Amino acid sequence: MKNRAVHMLHADWKYFVNLWSSPEFQKEKYGREFSRLDLMLKSHMRTSDKPVNAENPANNMHGKVVMEKLKNEREQGLNDKIDEQIFQELLGEDRHGYLHAYGRVKSITDYFGVKHSHTDLAQDVVGLKERADESIMKAKKEVEEARKKVRQAKLEAEQTKKEAEKARKEAKATRQKVDAKIEANNKM
Image 1: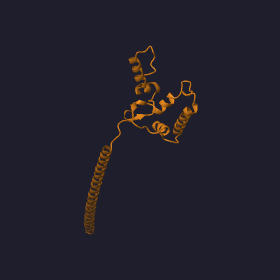
Image 2: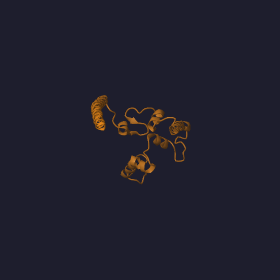
Image 3: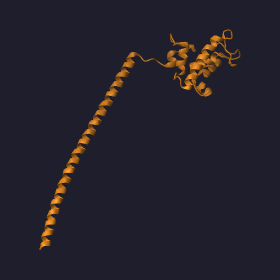
């Protein structure tokens, strides 16, 4: 808010700052949301790509070089760090409820959401275990039903085999009787 143009009303300036910093505007302008890493790289360089702090350019450039090196490694497939991990590797973890590169404007919970408590995580684990146990029991029931069907199919197959054998024997006996009658008729 400090950099407000003299001819602009405070309310108008506040509106534009909120608009330009909104994720929707950034996504529309750049095709994606700006990460904190992108924000830091942009905010520490002038539009002419020179460091903001000309007195000590080595300090400014060190962070930029490290960040760009890690981003290039990610693009080449040498690491799979996301922008947030690269940012934290360079500046360290955020502490005391505020984020690097955002100052006191945005808290950690605003950016990342609320962290789950131990009890929430424990309840989630219990729920997952219950669902896993239910899935295991369901799978066991399905296996048992499949085994019953296989046993039933085997019994039916054996029964069919016995009936076929009985029919074959009856057909053989009938054939022998018919052959005997034909032979007896031929002798007459």
